Image 1 (tube, rainbow, N blue to C red):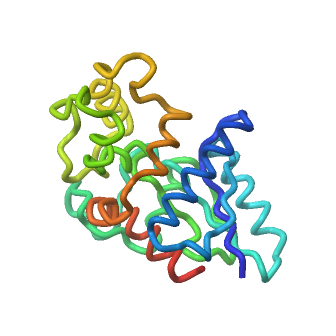
Image 2 (cartoon, rainbow, N blue to C red):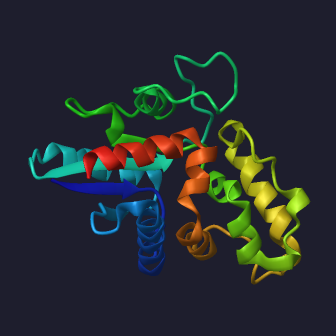
Image 3 (tube, one colour):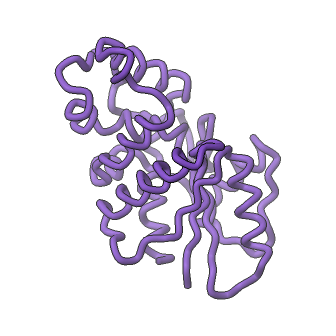
Length: 214
C-alpha cells in the first residue's frame, strides 16, 4: 500500500512546493523512513490539503492510503487533558475532533484516526523545539534568550512561536532572519526528529502512525 501524505505548505509557487516536499522528505529520511517514504503532496493552504485528502479517500483504491498533515492553528483539546500541558499524550481521535470543531471538516466515513495528523500549533513549533539546529542554522547572531522555553511548546499559540522566532533571528539580518517559505523549509529539512519526538507529543504520534502504515 502506498501512503499519500497531503501536507499544508508551499503556497501557489511551484518552487516553494518543491522545497516543501524536499523538506518533509529529508526530515522523514532522518527519522528512519528512507526507502519507504510516503508520497508527499505539497497542497498549499490547509483547506486545499483537506480537499485533496477527501478526494483521494473517495477514490477507494485499496493500494493507496491518504494521510493529512496540517497546522492545528490552535491548542488541541484531548479527552485525557486535565490542564493545558502539552505533555499529555494525544488520545486517538483528538486530531479529527479538533478539525471538526475548529474547521467544520467532516471526517470521511471509513477513515482511521491516524489518517489525520496535526502540527501543534504550527510547523514553527517543530522548528522551535530543536535548539541545536537553530543555533547551527543561524549562527552566533541567534538571540537564544528570545526563544520560547523548550517545555510544553504545543501549548503555545502559533503567533507566540512565530513572533519568538522572528525576534530571535532579527539580528541575523534581513536576508538571514526567519521567514515562512524558503527558509522555513530549509530548516525543516535539517531538524533532528529524535529531539522533536521527545519534545512534541503530536510529532511522536505522527512518527508512530507512519511506522504502522508504511
